[in-house]
Length: 383
Image (cartoon, rainbow, N blue to C red):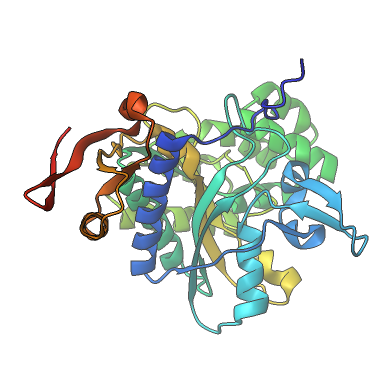
């Protein structure tokens, strides 16, 4: 027998209890961002592929579902990341000259899940700042990310900082080809020292030793001091370490750490990158960083930084009680009853109309009270 109710692998329904948790968090986060001046945008789920992949590199290309537009014959993509769409809106549609803050929340689709038990349809929520090149924008975004996790009742175990400029500065003199660069990135991400040893054979000793040191530059605030000692004093590296130091100095109470070999989104980012972790998870619950060049394909390479996270994953981890009791109202055509139901709903109460013939399943409604007629007046009593 064909199981028509089965969904594709790593695709799942969101049932009422979880959906309410997700929606509660979505409203809280977007309301908070609005109060901070972040304007909500809703880009389309489907776009021309070259627009979706602008600045995203090979990683984003591999994550994107592709199809042919029956009206134009052009290749379309189902978005795997909303950030390039927000950059397009900033560069091509809004055309603001000063600082612009945008936020968004919507489903994205991935060809493969990002990890074990991960969904291929994350609900991505994020915030972006456009038009400010200074470190102040990076500080604001990291601070807002930490407060967003607090709104979700998630204690941040740590926020690991990195900087893609360090890796770029080291590989540029070595003149590595694209294939070698991809292999180096993969080895860095997995902290595979033997692979890095093989890949860097033949490079100048200073460059090779620095690349081999990057996976070891992981830990607390003391990492920056070690990095200054073992990395070459190249101008790009000095600038990158100074920027990271400014972040640390501005946030003495945040659980900040470092991972200078974390190069996720390397082709996408242009400066400081960061990943937030929760105490009970080894995988990041939020990612972000600076991506100044992504808008160039749309005509304006504006400075930009931002973060995003999967709200479905956040909702699973958030210790949030969103269950609500309800009031049962009888199926009676009565004007006074209708007015009382309207009044109760206006106060935020859930009122469940009891359709006739379902008395045996009332326990499924989560009603703990009922509307009853007493002395020609509808009143709420315990059920």
